Length: 117
Image (cartoon, rainbow, N blue to C red; front, side, top):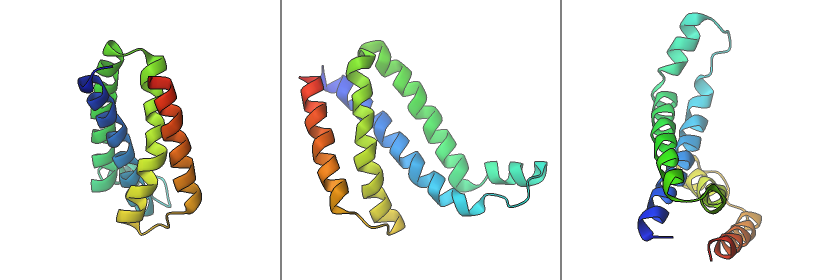
């Protein structure tokens, strides 16, 4: 797999991971009483709106990546989100980073190396 293909796939994973952090930041603004105005206001919340835009861009880029790389090779890269999201959560949300996450990250990267090679 070329460096270009890997770069596109990693950009997709980073986009999805960033979207998850933005979804978490948007979650306190979820309306407690559902009405059209509260839902519309929530959709245009800066965090949720940004997450949806990033997800949309990542999805389009993902479809392009799948044009270049077989799904069976590309999809395992999405497991990197299980590493990136906790790291971003630690940095931006002050969430704890546990040793189990580090062990799991090692297993994910090992598995990814087996699949890609």
